[in-house]
Image (tube, rainbow, N blue to C red; front, side, top):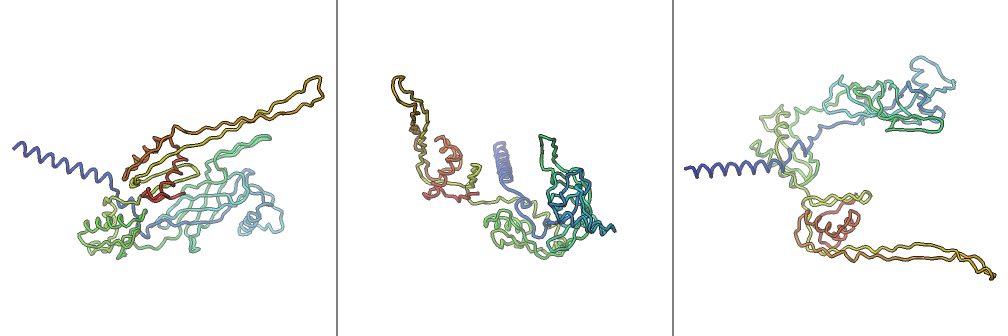
Length: 371
């Protein structure tokens, strides 16, 4: 009886370990897919920053700043037509912001401010009322407030120092949302999930996980990047509950075997599924060193010879004869590939050329993407 109980406990422990391992290797649908329509929207606007301590635009070099300043003063009842403005306490800026989904009127959002002219710094400046437009040309928010920058600039007669970027900054909660984006999630009859890393296998696994949760075939993979979910009757008018349940499902994403190479920085990233067929790799460098040590040749005192410079060239050839040929057998894993190439003493630069050569020979079972 005790032996049977021990076997049952052991079986339960094995099931728990397997479930834990599967959970660790899987990801939530919330982390691998986006819900179509639930996204940020970019806003942009043009404005003026005032109150700078002589670090603003030069009005002679920035005519748009002069025109904007004149137009603003005229709207406030100040006539400056024909007046030669010489202030350098104003800077023209571009103002950008992200409008989060389902943001309501009166909500405040952060904005970024970047100098457009030749201003030296926006430190201590205040952004004046600036409408922020969407892609449709409509005003969705109004921005205003003091600009906080992450750098500074100081100079004297013979030296100058700059830290960070003093010509750009942010205004926390600097814009008030004036218009809402009309998107009624609760009234949707179909919800589409967009995979962040498109893959047919991942899309099918997501659909199967959703169908197992609902108990009905409501989800189908439309393509390698989209899973279409029909809202079941029990979730009519309550799509949020459906999406909440779907987001918490665990799915093991699949990915193709790929090697990503950045030749500029020498970075190589290889996926777990990279495999190599049987191939032999040898790597060696031939180094030729040339050094010039010219010498002066003096004639004997009793001769009529002239002083000349005699060239002296030293040549030295170095060959890496100690390098060996590494044999990589068929079906080796990523770790074995790296260990085999490291055994040759190969650096990242040479490794890039070797991987491309292995791919050209047809022995690398993966896609190479050069950034």
